[in-house]
Image 1 (tube, rainbow, N blue to C red):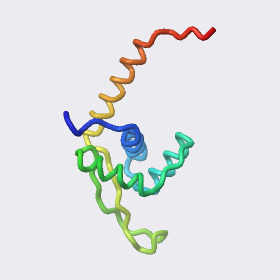
Image 2 (spheres, helix red, strand yellow; image 1 turned 120 degrees about the vertical axis):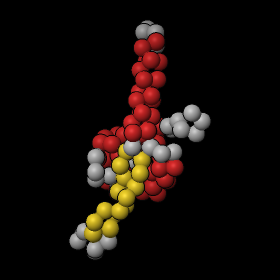
Image 3 (cartoon, one colour; image 1 turned 30 degrees about the horizontal axis):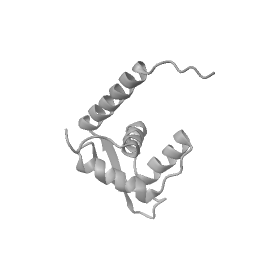
Image 4 (tube, rainbow, N blue to C red; image 1 turned 30 degrees about the vertical axis):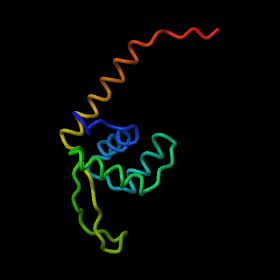
Length: 108
């Protein structure tokens, strides 16, 4: 499927969106990626990845309720769609298949 493959960063953002299950928005995704990978990521990078993933049909966005922490403003939340899970499964299967074929290294 042309245009629907996952880049490494897209895969990480998509996995994190699935992990956050209902609490995924740009800030929480960036924080969770930092926790999980010890990798710093900017909010604009997360936002760009989410936009691409939404365009591919892997996530959908919706506006959540207002919160006091945000001064009554609403959050744009993201949830993974069936196609997103399928893309993650395909990515995992490909990586596992290649890992299983790797010869054992002999570092001497």
